[in-house]
Image (cartoon, rainbow, N blue to C red; front, side, top):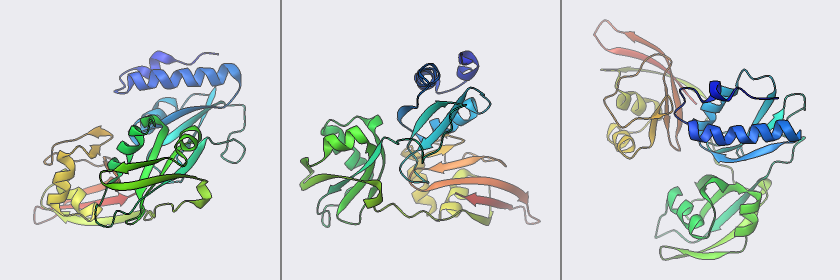
Length: 262
């Protein structure tokens, strides 16, 4: 049983990553067993969904520790095997990176960096979120979480300690439900529409774009003036996604835009 490799890899900006994932898929087919990938990005997950969507031989399950996680592990399994999150052992666990950050605020990437300094691999780490001023929690592979358990370190001048957690013990970040947003803008520039959709100032959106945190249809976009079209997907790291449902011109030569915030 073989997968159509060249068809899957054709015209993909993620060719190298897909080649690695295809190896996991073939291992699952040959061994008749569930095979898990490392954590992968949201944009790669979308590419996998598009490329693997019509394959009959392989089934895929995506798990990031909670429903709205951005980074997830992919489980590959032969299609004739029943696949669901209740019947398969999911190799994911949580950690709490605890410290007093009241006077020395830290961001998600700061915590990711300190985990790497403690010999965790980037692809073993899923989403990270802040726990007020008491540190952060993160989703990891089970192996990574167990290896980090009870470790101590320093993030800048703050002492930290790490504790492994079951997923049921974690403070899963709150995510807003999907919402339809209607806005009227002077243009269809991505910075204006993202500002309205995410509820952030135009200057803050521009800063996020220039830092490389915004993607248009999962491709990195560093142009605040880029125009968007119906069907486009705008993704802002840690804020979710906006889908352009409709664009109409008003009598006053402005643009009435309908968005779905996800």
